[in-house]
Image (cartoon, rainbow, N blue to C red; front, top):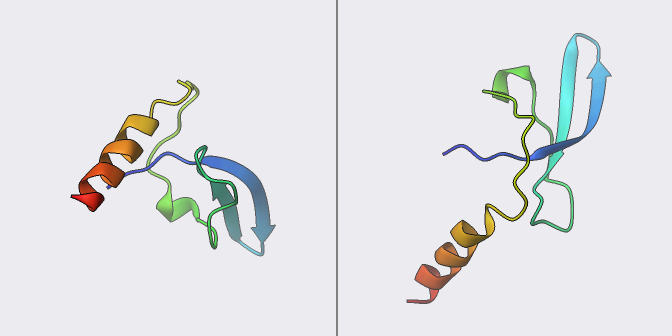
Length: 64
């Protein structure tokens, strides 16, 4: 399952680059960090609120 999250901070520790991320629908940053090995692609296009229908459907089926 692939999820697109915004990189909010990049930190270089020794030979490792750490990417701190946040989902647009989240109030706080994601827990932990990602490394180069976690990144499968980049995007430069933003379509606001495109992920909301998926979140709404997921919540709807949790309640059923």
